[in-house]
Length: 365
Image (cartoon, rainbow, N blue to C red; front, side, top):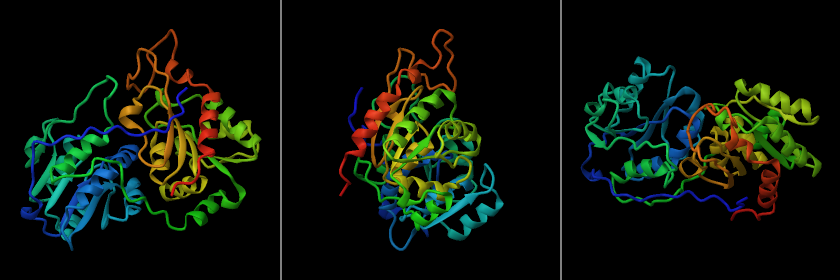
C-alpha cells in the first residue's frame, strides 16, 4: 500500500470577483464567520491567514465562531480577537461585540443561510461569501455557490477557500500558514497524564463525529496500539465524550493504555497531540488538529475523499483502498453484502508499516 507522504493538491483559480483592498471601507478590520466543525475550520486556516495579509495596519482580524472552537482561533497568532457564539446563531451579546469592534469587511465561510444572516444583521458594509441556499441577497460581494459532487475530487477543499482569499488580490496557492501556538503544552499534557518524559507517545483517535462510515474498526486500533507498546512506546487514546466506549475498549484490551477520551478540552487536546507527535486517526477533527500542530500521522479513509479533505500540516500518510462505491460521503454504509468494505480493506499491518516509516523520518527543520 502507498507509503508516500500526503501533499494536498490545490487548483489555482482566478475568481470572477476582484476587490481593491486599498478602497475597501475596512473601519477597524476584517470579521470572519468561521465554519462550525473542527475539521472544516482547520482546513480554512491558510485561506484566512492570506486574507489577513490584505488587512491594513492597525486594523484587526476578528473571528466569529462556535464557542467550542474558540481555543483553536485563539491559538492562531494572526487573529486579533475571537467572538465565541454561545448558541448556534449570533445572538444579541455577540452582535454588541461586533458593533464595538466595528469591522468594515466580513467574510462568511459556512454555506448556510443563517451564517450569512448573522453578518447581514451585524451592519457590516462589505459582506463577501458564496451564493446558494437563497442567501445571495444577504451578501454584497459574491462568488458562485460551493461546488458539490460525490465523485472523487480533483483538488483539496482548501482551493475553494483560497479562491475567496484571492478575491482580495493575488495569493500564494499553498498550504503554508503560521503554526498554531500551544502555550505550556508539556505542562498541559502532563496534567492529563501524558508526561513527555515517559514516551515515546502514540496518540490514537478512533472516533469521527461524522459517523461510522469514517471509523476504522476499534479492534484494528487495538492491534496498532499493541504493536507500539511492544516496541516500548506509550499509547494515549483521545476523543470526545461520545467516543468513550471506543476508548474504554482499547484501554481494557491493553493494560497501560491511557484513555483520555472525554477528558480533554480543545486546548488540552492540542497540547496532548503536540507532545505525542505521532498520531493514528480516522478522517476526523483529531486528524486535522494533529496536522495543524505539526504531528506526523497515519489517517484511515473510508467513505470520504482523501484528495478533498486530507490533513494540512505535519507529515502524514493517508491509507485508502476504495471499492467502486467510494467515496459515497455517507455517514453509515448502505451495503448489505459487504458493509464498510472501504474501511475493512485497510489492515493493521499497513498502518504499522506507515508508522514505522514516519517514526524513522528525521525532524523537520
